[in-house]
Image (cartoon, rainbow, N blue to C red; front, side, top):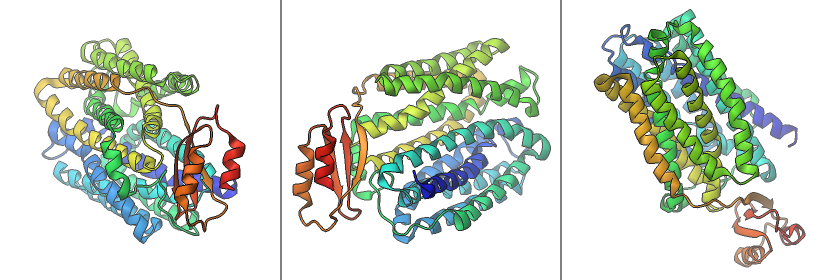
Length: 449
């Protein structure tokens, strides 16, 4: 990547980081405040935790499409202002109903799709995937940092302090967008990184993608439901104050990272993604049963908590890769948008259902719910077809004034090793899926350039 692409990756990663930190810092502490917030119940606490997922899922695709019409930066800045407003609303009250409203407003600032599209506008086609990978890693790191520092900030400034800091982070994100992130010279609808309404139907009709959408919904439903009760268990059963919960999160996250990264490499390099995918789901199931029946033993609780995050981290990494493998070359960006919407919908469902189950059946009921839906996921995943390990390529056409793109598309499709091809005349680029072992690289470059 050149200097601007590294700069783009770094600045947009920073924008993502401040927003993700703001969203997730509340997760490890909010369940502890049922007794200190007016009108709070386990159900309302769960709704407050997950409600941003509902509004995020609702507004993400529309705001992504809006950014195609009015520009990326206006949508991102507007979304961050809405996010800051929701944070201020939640910070200014100790009433659970108002906090729910604030969290819902936070989710309305759904700028993920617009941010990814801006990243695509600022990078060359051949390096776009690298920039997206850097941004994706930032999201994972932000989640882990939020889980560790959230309890520490809570001890210093309380829940309202977390929301005030979240508002400040949103303002910092706006400053980054305005003053640090470059302005793209031109804007396109990128099939690999943006949402295109013309491809929504294809993405929604793909049965393999539906299985992936169900899976990410269940994974984030389980995660959110777990955190509606885990902080309470760490406090009541292990005797740890909230400021000490980092002593659990830090070793578990580091350990899960060390275990999951080699599994991710094996899955992709040796084409073992489906069997390891099923094993990771089984690790989630074991963790849920372990938390349901073994949480009285601190060692067992820590081991199954580690098992959960090994599975979670692995699945978070490989599911987007599988979406790319199962989607056709034209609808990858749109498929990722639908996938992300399913993810946020799962967060809302986890908060709502987790709170309802906890109020009726206690901690054990929440974990058994997680085990049950994970088993459903296992059966859904078993029916996934074996993925093809083709490589996505984007090539810029040397002659962008061609009149017969259909003939060129047919010619490219007949090159050895080319499995899928789609030409975007507006961008002047060719989107490809190729088998690297078979590909006639010289022939491909000759035709395109």
